[in-house]
Image (cartoon, rainbow, N blue to C red; front, top):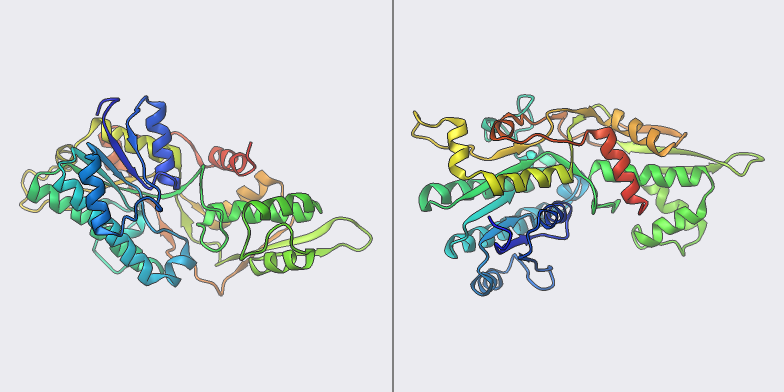
Length: 371
């Protein structure tokens, strides 16, 4: 790529796409192409065909996807598999037809089996059953990476698939109905801390920015306390005191372990691969020279480090200075017990992460507060 290369970023407003856009802009790339959902519905085959015919991007970053946490994945199963497969099919196929020089497809480590070896190497793909709650999304992402791999092998395209671990960072989703675990915890603990301090201004400001099920900062205290209680934030007044006794109930046992990567680190890895590596480099790094089967050419992006959900909650609690109790509802699903990536392929290709989790949580909370 050069600084004037035309680069189409699908999904530029999301956590992944916005981080990649920022990285490219900071590196001096000036010919970036975007379309909002209102301007281009990527599930619409004819609309995507027309877009590629008119714009002729040289490089494509496919970061657009229908995403969500454990509740959303399990609730909207049909939408997750249909919309993601439609998006991928349209963008990847039109990239091939229009001679795109390189495409970067972003998936997720949920593609790996529920009982995958830990840490998870790329080669454990399709070796066992998937975690049930996110199976439709995972199958869609597997289809996308296999589509890239298959087009490379049949048509000689240069499509690279990357599977980032759990991401967090600027422009994250803090919607309590659909957010992933880390941003959800940051918001819930922030709200719990605000109630603990009897800081209703902060509570109402938060709900005005991000209403919960239609409840915003103009609602009555009763209605606000009711919706927060639904999401595990329970408050009661302390006798003869203006302070509040607040507890926070979180889903599951807190025992599962998760790996987290700062989104801007992920973006740096993606741009590194776009600038410096091709599909052939991935093949060479895995040494398929004596094999007739070339498979699992995707690349994990992660830290190779993990933390329990319970420890994560305590770390965020400490950063936000919340003093109440955190309770665990073991009747709710935990999901996969461990999801640690093996990032050695990416390390061998020349990239490692920079931001450790504790520093990332501090940055995340500052971003949430708008600082």
